[in-house]
Length: 189
Image 1 (tube, helix red, strand yellow):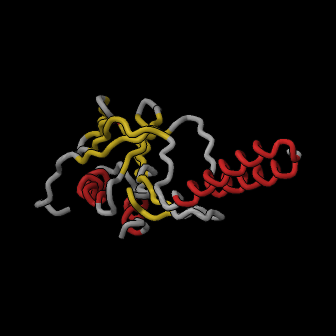
Image 2 (image 1 turned 45 degrees about the horizontal axis):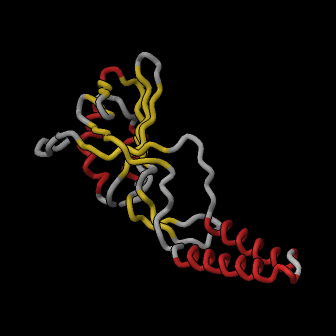
Image 3 (image 1 turned 180 degrees about the vertical axis):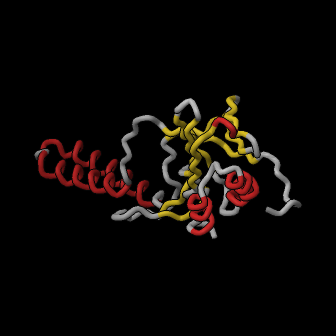
């Protein structure tokens, strides 16, 4: 490990996902709105012509808005709240400190960053990530398991962690496989 690198703590914004969330893809929503529009044309008879016209107009506007906003950011499905800080001797989540001496197994997963283009299989959407799929998971010596998600702001944001990860590896808190995987399969290289 190079000695000229600063070993300051590295801080990220913490992400708290919602416990239960129904995730509806825009493609499914577009298909459902189209089906509703077609069904109302055949179900309502001619004496309800104004209602059919109002439903058709509102559906067309909804479909148009969904279509032009398909090039946006993925929904957050949670809140950005607090911070997570990685230090050479502890991991701090908001005001709670977890000393590295008490951590048995440590897993750090870097998945995405804010603005990364992502696509979902079977979707017509071209969306951008909010960078909140990253997490740290660990077990303490009191057998408590924790998982905390955090946001990476850009594709180079993960590199701030490199000196800290070297310390974690040298203290045998992360395995060679985990450290190697973080370097080798990183999506941002």
